[in-house]
Length: 153
Image 1: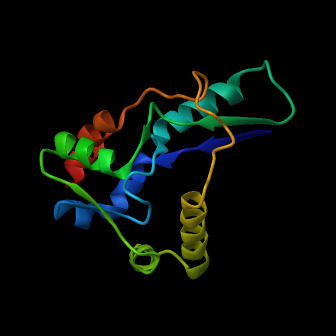
Image 2: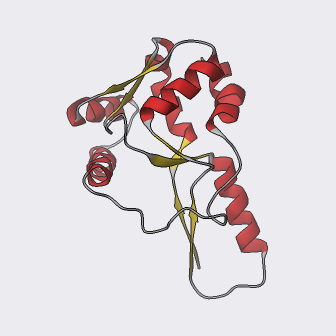
């Protein structure tokens, strides 16, 4: 069995297209809170490589962190460059976060699970899996945003 522990997906930014068009990146996390961000395609590649290898058996946990830990302030800077318009990070309340998730079509259970995860991460969360050469994937947020987010905006 292979269990992947992944960072925050780049594709989560697609849930914020309307706000990004207005130059805002809303987040319930503190703007200076660093976390691993990762391209889901890189996650798929890690999964495929691990599952196709015949050199392991049993249970294994594999962290997938992306190339660097990013704060939402840094993400806004990267997005500004990649999409060619100014973006600023803005902290929102948990209730505003719930409203955004609800408008994206998530169920009450899904919403509370995601909000619970975000509050848990804000309160002295220490990732169990440290960043290493084995957990770090190559795709940068800048490259991903230029290729995928910019055309969507």
